[in-house]
Each structure stands twice: as structure tokens, then as C-alpha cells.
Amino acid sequence: MSPAFAAANMIQPLNFAAPTRSKERLFSDPLKSPNTTPFAGSTHNLRSHDRPNSWSQHNRSAAAAVVGVSDLVKEKKTKSAYSSSNLLITKQEGLELYEDLVLGRSFEDMCAQMYYRGKMFGFVHLYNGQEAVSSGFIKLLRKDDCVVSTYRDHVHALSKGVPARAVMSELFGKTTGCCRGQGGSMHMFSKEHNVLGGFAFIGEGIPIATGAAFSMKYKRELLNENCDDVTVAFFGDGTCNNGQFFECLNMAVLWKLPIIFVVENNLWAIGMSHLRATSVPEIWKKGPAFGMPGVHVDGMDVLKVRNVAMEAITRARRGEGPTLVECETYRFRGHSLADPDELRDPAEKTHYAARDPIKAFKKYLLENSLADEAELKAIEKKIDELVEDSVEFADQSCLPTREQLLQNVFSDPKGFGIGPDGSYRCEDPKFTEGTAEV
Image (cartoon, rainbow, N blue to C red):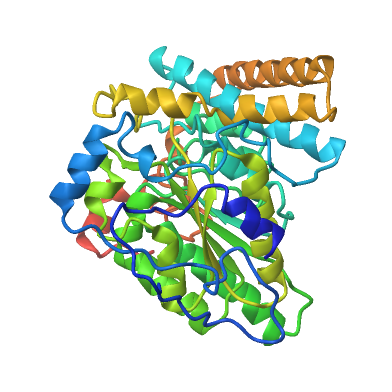
């Protein structure tokens, strides 16, 4: 059993209270061969679970619990989240992870303040509570590796190295933003850092990520380039019922692409409980169905996420193909800043708030003498100053000019709809008639 599988098993796959057969059938491992090593998601170790007799029976049992949703996934140990963890990190790695976690949380808290002060417009979806997933995966990536995000993309961009100034300016709609103010909250993009975008519609980023992974395989196998880059695609539990998800899992296995599909299962798709919307709630099981490893991991524990991520990324770099990782996490705020968050059970929110990934990791660092209070406070102070600086920079930056409005729509270097003299083609009657020379 690999260390990553042991870590993932700290949180058990969804287990329904239905009678089990005396000899429970095991899945066969479609990837098992003498040349491959055991992996967290190896289907050889994933057990089949009986389905509940009826949804009404399941709903009654869930309603009886103090925390309906989270009660279906329980820890083996009730002590500290790290009490039985055998994962090892160096002091430097620990401090880097802590800094990234704190950056994500502090940045998002500041975004909430700026949104309510009228500095940001449109929908803004914050990442509070899910930081362990971003830090656990992205801090293991190299600059040439690609990340594809969702509309909840600020922290993914920060973890990948996009400067806080560029992200905040983008949120303010300023020209100094990573998309020159034209992307906004849901469309962070950085060619320099290989952040291939946030996507407003669920599922639409997965084909982009699959294409990026295909290009990496093409460079390696057809162009004979020394390329072992990987792509990580982030998406939520609600996306896993969409067609693009299944199509891309199939293609990724067929072509053995270097991609990791990361499900950030925060248990809610806006106001729809994951258990009400999905016939088989165990998303990780969809991996073995297509012939790839699938694993469920505690997404509130950055070290467990990091350990699973390390093995999944290593598999992809070795050319062993894709992996599906389901990270069970929780968002501490509503779906967006426009959401009053009145649908979720307060007891459920309290349960997950007590498992705050940043507080748990801070405790781990202190208890294992990887850092002292002074070092952690210095990091927190540094991040506070960095976030404050990003706000000042964004606030003082310029708004886009009128000429920028139609740029970057088509590949015309002058910008779509702008003539050689700088005038708008759409204001020329001949252009709208289709008779203008372009």
C-alpha cells in the first residue's frame, strides 16, 4: 500500500448503511501491470459499495444526523487531523505551504471587503476553506505545467505564481490586471504562468485542459521534444454530471494524456446538495469506470492532498496517463458574494469550520517544530502587507480606454473592429452592410 493511499484512506469513501454481502466483489484494476507501482487511486484497492434501498430511506438517515452531508464521510481518527499522519515535509516546504495558504485566505477576505465597497462588479466567487486543494496540488507544479480553473479561480492563479497585484487589478477591471481588466473575477489567465483561464460555465475548462495535455504528449512523442509537462484541471462536484467531463475522461485514457482531473467537491453546487443531484455520489469511482485510477482524499488536509498530488503528478510525468482525484472540501462562504448562504445547515457549516485547513496546518507546524510562532506571524504580516499593496496598486491603476473595448476578440493585431486610422469599423455603415474592405 502506497503512502498516498494510506493518506487518502484517512477519509473513507462514501459508505451507505446498507447490508453488505459476505463476499464483496472487488473492481479489477485496468491499469495493473508488472511495470506500474501501486497508486492511491488503484482500483485494486477500491471496494464496491452497496446502494441504499431508496432515496427516501437515505434522506431520513441523513436528516437524523447532526451534520447531514458530511456525516456520510467520516475520519477513522477523531484526534487532530494530523495526529496519525506519517507525511514528511521539510521546514522550507512547510513555510512555503503556509505562506500560500495564508495568501489565498487573506486575498479572498480582502476581495469581500472590496466587493462590498463597490470596487468590484459582477459575480465574485471566493475560495475560503478550499485552500488546501490549491496549495497541495499547484505548489508541486513547475512553471511549464498548465492549470485550468473554474469561476472560483483567484487562488489557483495566486498559487501558480500570478502576482497579487495582477489578480487584484483584474478584479478591479484595470489595465494592469493579468487580462488587462477584460477578464474579471471568473476569467483569470496568464500565458507567462501557464494559467489557461478560469471559466464561467461549469465543465467548459475540462476540454481545454485535455487539449493542453494532448499538446504535451504531441511534443514528447511526435516532435521528440524533452517534454514531461503535466496539466491539472480543477472543477467542482456539480461539473461531474456534465457530458464534457465524461468525454474527456474517455479521451484522456485512450490517449494516455498527462493530466490530473481534480474534483473540488465542496458538497454543494450553488444551493443543490451533491447527494441530491448525483446518483452515485462517490465521484472517484468514475475514474476506474474509464480505466484510470480514482481516489478520494480529505481536501481539508493540505499534506494528504499534497501526497496524493505528488504521486498523481509523478505518474503523469512518467507517461502513465491520467488520474481522477476527488478532494472533499468545503467553502466557508456562500456560492458567491451575492449569495446569502441560507440553504446550508448551520451545524454542517460549524462542523467544517472546526476543520479549517489553515488552522490545522499551523498546529501541525508548531507541534512538529517545523516553525515557531514568530516565523508564522512574520509570514502573516508579510501577506497582509502584500494584499494591502495589491489593493493600493489596483486602485491607482488606469481603467481601460475605449479603444481597448473590442481588442483581443479576434486575432487581428490591431484589434477587432478597429481600422488603421484608429476608428471603429462598427461605426462605418459599410461595415454593418458587409461591403467594407477589411
